Length: 539
Image 1 (spheres, rainbow, N blue to C red):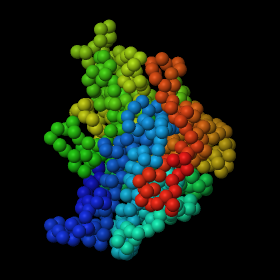
Image 2: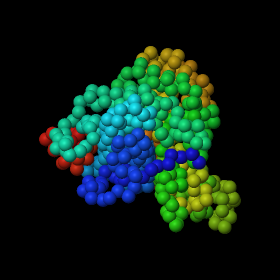
Image 3: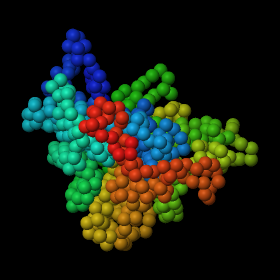
Image 4: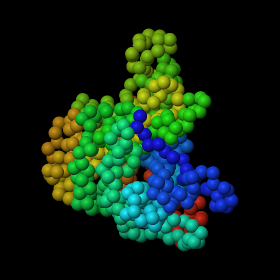
């Protein structure tokens, strides 16, 4: 199984090591702080640690944070039944001390801080002295630029820091950066990265390691940034550069995109990689039920075990399930259920009786499971297959963790960005816009679209293709549609289906003008000083 081997080195990303202790301790290992920042191999190890830290966004202790970021919270596509992320998703009394806002802020500024150290150390060593040093510098540039972009999308009001933090600059005045300065730094970092990184990263035995940054990842993010800046020509260039690389291509088999534990194929640009091996995201305890990977499968898979006749967790049903986040009826209504293969390929709609010993009276093996009104939403609601895992828990379906890879960027989004960019640039009749739109639309089994495109058509196709992938909230915000779409469709409402025994539409009524951005964590405001760094309006 191809995976990155993550090296845990000397409080690599804990940022909590005591300087005094380090000075007083005799080093028993060759891997010292001095080694990490004064040698090419050391810098490469620090960057490896950055990859390890980046995927903690989705690991067990942060699954709540990943849920609100990647599950298209507070948009028109999801219903949040429960879990600690539900209140945030429903915009229920969101305040400046909400834990998710602090966690995401800290996560990205930690990445920025470590990236600053790598960039400065690499430049001191000399970028042309070693290809290893230059690659580490480029990867750190992409980490930093990407993190500032993610922070901007949610908070907008940021402070910029490009220098390693040490005793000489601890005392500083924090002031919000101008938007143009933020985007200038992001674009410079991404340009530096894509000018150095290769299109693919050699790996064994597979040809590409999808867990590391490549030129394609840098160009994809560069295109995303250009879309935010309404620089359609730049977005088109970056997308078409990726299309021109033979290593990346859409899969013909729609169902194969998310099928399997190792999502290592030509449509993937970047993944968070997981495995049960040491360094694969978890640890090996005596009791294998305690293996810790990520919990996105649990969050998205219904808790079907509560239903009479489904009392055993099974890998065919996705293993262990909590049933916290689902596609809502609006999202499912966007598909032509007869033609569009994504309706079946991207969602599991039914569960079946598979155990003879607990088969309810009057039911046969293979029958579709049914339940009472009070259990339907938690236990039998349709769910996404994108995190559905019948592979890494096949040996133990009761394991409360998944080691299936998580796709962060894939080529389908690149094609839809290109279609949208041409639409904005040349209009709905643009041949290129329609061509790129059809790459995704026709692949799903739909009849060829001949045009003209409208913004609504594009927005709906983004929803059909990229739901549950963290694309929706930034897209709607970028297009100025977030409030409108949230108030129309957020959550789900009891209408035609009486089994949805409770309305989960709080976000429709709770959405206020300031929900276009997140609150800056109050603890950060207190440390920076509200007179210099004021809170976002409304919080």
